[in-house]
Length: 115
Image 1 (cartoon, rainbow, N blue to C red):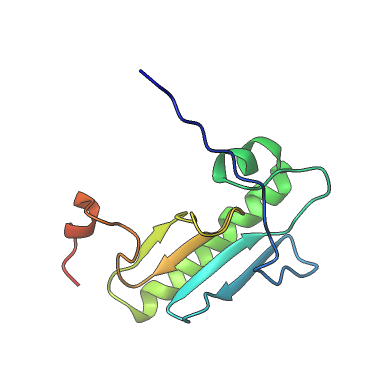
Image 2: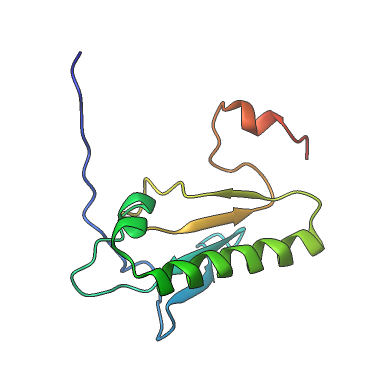
């Protein structure tokens, strides 16, 4: 069996991360809310794995708290939301909160809720 490993070099240039530990913004098309952790010198946040491994406990708590707050807020306005970390286009962790299964492909999860 041949294994192919893909390593992403983190790339945060697509996000406007401010002075907070966590930033929220819309994607380019405006249909998805993105939650992005602030870049830290010497830390690799190119994926959820590396963020959970390298971010401080405080930054992790703030990040997940923001994801929960935004999800709760979105559920006030939409009956269903989809949360993912799909990010093959950008090698930097970002949680996506969307009202439809944008990047779920042919996954069974796509068919769980009929929007």
